[in-house]
Length: 184
Image (cartoon, rainbow, N blue to C red; front, side, top):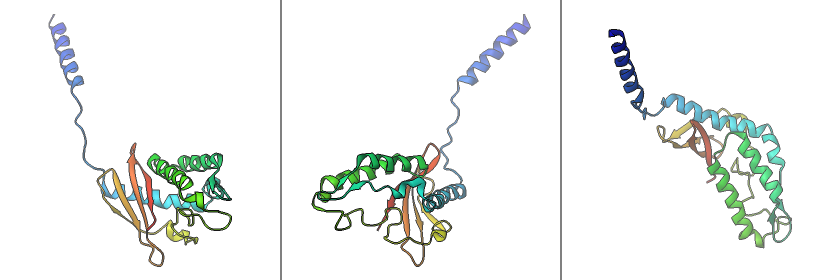
């Protein structure tokens, strides 16, 4: 009988502790680890881009002529590759898609891509320039991060002789992803 009482008490205590909510860990991650993870995303993105970006860079999703329009099949393929890369958040993809659809509906109605560079599409969107830059520098330059300890940061690469590269990144499911490339 004593053994049975002890067993019942044990079960009651076990049930009580099992039902208790585990303490929440709201402490931000290790700043050095977060900085390393963010730096890796930026550097590895440029490594991916330099090696051909899975064919994305060869996709021209605009149809020439007046008005200039978007080839929706190529447009979807372009953004599918970006999504598959693992470097970009859905926020980035949605914003970029909306930007181009807006350009098509407004500005590009009066532009002929056969005759002139298109507004908003007249420079490399990932390099923020018209020229290919030093990829070795883009994949090794130090990255400064503003906002560590939050779920949204700004990462800046000071490239000395080139325009600094600025990114906004968000943390989704424990992984840092590019949500915006700031071309200024």
